[in-house]
Length: 318
Image 1 (cartoon, rainbow, N blue to C red):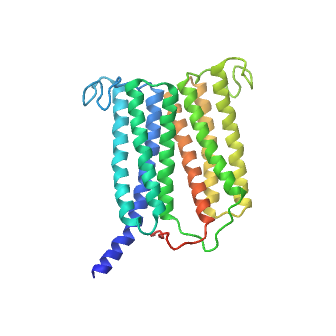
Image 2: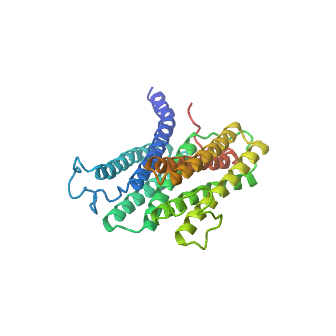
Image 3: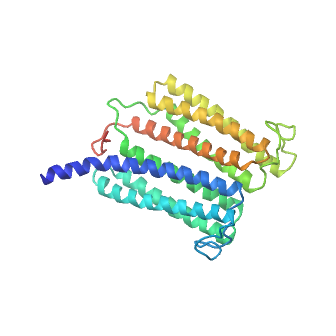
């Protein structure tokens, strides 16, 4: 009877971990969007240079909206930390003997979260420059990616006939990396004050290559050109996913990434044309993080599908 109960607990652990990992990833995407709200509303120093308190107090003044935005963002991050601790406990209990990759990825996510939290505190306390804010966003995106990979590693079943790891897999890697680069260049555009350096769209002050107009215009237009490059890469990825005979899930995910990319680009244009309306700015970041997350999932699943089945991978529980 004890053995039966232990088997039942073991069977429930993968399902619990997968649910928790994906929930934490979803919350992290929400935190990234909330962070964008902090940025576009200029609430980053809403609590002054005080951390973890807000201007030296536990709760901000009721009439200080920017302080409440920043404070709520911090509380959101603390919630993700709690979920992360639960993930570590479940990973150690359920996978330390049969799927070390899940534990490794979960610990990597925990390390990234710790680094990101510390960096966020330093940015506030020392009023660090935009490059550090960009690094803070980069760590948030890497956290989102690592959480998704941890969940996918726990969920994935090896295919009976693995696919070949080919140029389509490489294309998925490159497209995923480019999506992250675009997010970071977008953060530099915002942090350097170049958001409205090009107030028209798609040109920049009437020019396609405004590199002689100034550094802000150059930074802004490099971001736009990189976005165009990502679109072309995504179109190629969708084409080769279908042509290469990838499974239905990968094809649908790649199409979803392309659709969200077009939405992201459109919202980015609205952000500029409406003189940096906060709603469009936060939505732009939310869509960018969604594209990044989907591409991470595509890369991870395609990589796992190309592996030979091995005995130390725990099967997912339906």
